[in-house]
Length: 285
Image (cartoon, rainbow, N blue to C red; front, top):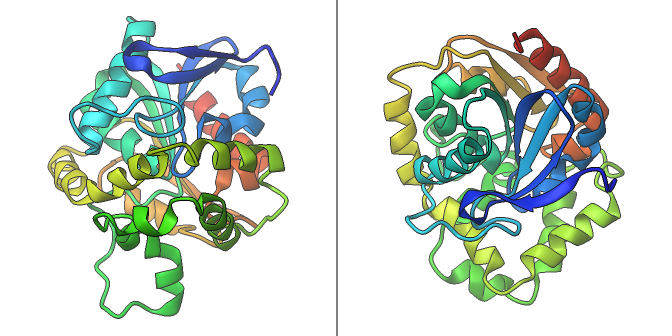
C-alpha cells in the first residue's frame, strides 16, 4: 500500500486508512476482511474523494463494541467516529458484505449527513427471501455461514487454530476471479483473524443478525430518499441486489459485476471503481 495513505485511529478507537482530497467517502469492509479490502480502489478514488476505509468494531483492528453487535449500535459508533473527524461535512457511504449491513442503518439514522449509499453484495438483515429447508445445494453453499457462524460456541470449538484452513476454503468458494485477491491481502486477513478472539468477534455479527433484522424493518418503514447504488457479483447475489435494496430505499440504481463472485472490491476493482465513480460523481453536488 502506498505510503501516502495514512493509517490512524478515530473516536472509539476505530481504525481508519485515510487518503485523497475532496468530498468524504466512507468505505466499510465485511467479514472476514479488513479496511485493506478496498486497497485496489484507493488510488482511483483518492483522485476525486477523501476516503476513510474503516475496520468495523470487532473486525480487523478496531476494538469490540461495548453495547452489542447489532448493526444499529455498531453504525452509531462508526458514525460518531466520522462525525468527530468531519463535524460539518456530508459524506458518501459504501459498504460490502457486513459493511453493507452496517451502512444501511447508518444511512437510515443519519440521512441528513449522508450524500449517497452504495451496498456491494450484502445480504442486509431483514430483507433476505424466505427459504424452505432443506436448502438446495447451491443456496447452502452461498449462505451456510449465516447458520454456522450464529451457533453458540461450536464455531470457536471447530475453528480455533484452523483459521487459515477455514478462510482459504471460504475465499475459494466465494470467488470467481481467483487472481483478484492478492496474496498480501489474504495473508493480512489470515494474520488478523488468527489473533485470540478475532473469529469470535466476527461471529458475533451473525449472532446479532436477528436483532439487526428487526431494527432494519423498523427503519424501512421510512424509506431512504438518498441516492442508493446496489451492486452484486454476477456469480453471487448479482442483480438481486437491486431488488433487495429496493425494500428500504426509494432511489435505487445498480446491477451486477461480470466475472465476479462475492468479493467485489478484490475480484474486480477496476469495474467496481468505474461504477462507484460514475455514481458518486453524479451525486456529489
